[in-house]
Amino acid sequence: MDKNIEKLKDIINSSSNIVFFGGAGVSTASGLRDFKGENGLYKDSYDKPTEYYLSSKCFYKEPEVFYKFYKDNMNTLNVEPNIIHYYLTKLENSGKLKAIITQNIDGLHQKAGSKNVLEIHGTTYSNHCLECGKCYNAEYVFNSADIPRCSCGGIIKPDVVLYGEMLPESYSLASSYIYDAETLIVAGTSLTVEPACSLVRLFTGKNLVIINIQPTQYDDIANLVIHDKMENVIKKIKDNNK
Image (cartoon, rainbow, N blue to C red):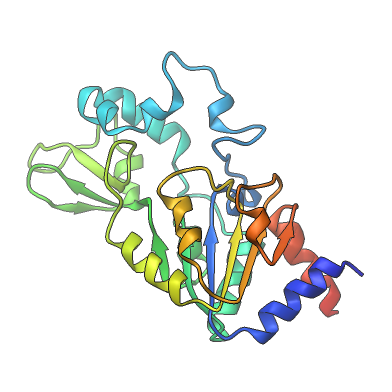
């Protein structure tokens, strides 16, 4: 029996205030590509750096270029949650998990039924007109031709945090949840993107758990480190419960 899995189970079972902090590796089990992984978007060849296509500079300077990349790579309307999302929903319903903090913009946690989800990089499921402020859903944006426009004629902008933009109010709330948490489980993130990865430094609780395929800069301060995919970890937890 895997000692790390047993230790993780003990931590979860004994904790009453858990916060989960996840990155792109949480959604790859649903078939989505991550950014910096072996087959990530950053490995593709483009005329300009990948970051440019998801930057505020690209959106305002070349909205047609932005939306071509955005629609090709960020559309999750037909993507379903995976074992990770459903496990976290179950953990939230049990009362143990107090908040899910995600760097992802795909809305899969909500699709799985989770309620207290703090999307510190925003979400593709919320959009607004830059001229009049009218709100639009993801279906309208992704199914529109070329640049999605409002009924007033203004360009519609996704409520996602583009490179060069400030983080939303949910970042401050996420900071509070992490600071107050007894257990922080970090999974599916390389913890290299600032300022989001700095959230880990705010944790003062009892158990810091890091689950990621590759080592992270915070492994040496964690109580438990598992170098594996999060979906594999959850499968092992379930297998041990049988």
